[in-house]
Image (cartoon, rainbow, N blue to C red; front, side):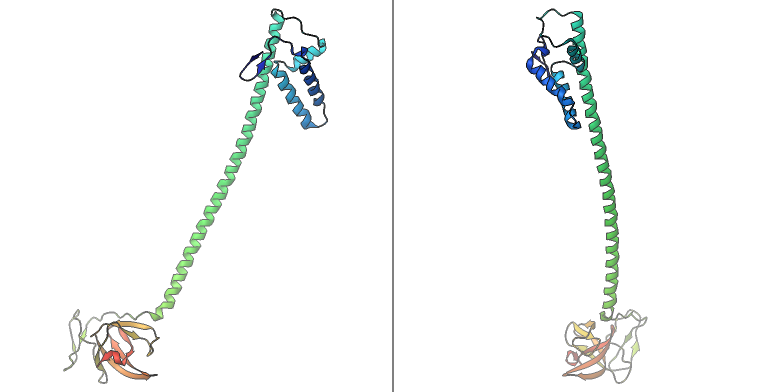
Length: 261
């Protein structure tokens, strides 16, 4: 016996003279006639492998069955018929290997097609996910913009009133009449418009000017210590005296004790 990288070859002995070979051959042939398709197909494959292992084909089996199984003759020199049989066996083995390779190639092709289909579905799902994520971002951005606008609208009443600088600033002379200064000159105090108004200065730093005479009212502006104001009227609310004043930044209420006048 000599071994090939893919199979072992019985060179000099006749396989049909081996009782184990003949017994297995008969068993596999009988299983091919099974009524179950899967069992019959498995027996056919095993029969082909069994014959290929001994460098035989179904043609060899048919010839030997026609001649009858006889004990092997003593080894003799190879004749022309024996050489042709040897070549035929090798050709049968090559054909069997080619069929197996074709079956493997077909199976690989089917697996590749399945993988391509899976990849295509994954690409479709990814595209849908990206589009959904983009729509979500747009909706979130729009919601943030609407929320910001709502917050600005709610905060507008509590923001300090901004007054544009007049084209001509008015300076006040406390001991004389009101005079108009040149544009760009900073006035020392707001203009006195009516005789009942009084002037005063902020007594504390960061003095809050509120919309209403209440410590919880919204703040219109802040005054620095020493900043001049005009006192228009006075009001007593609860236990606190309040002054309604006018400044360059607008009008509002401050506590009476925070203004020196």
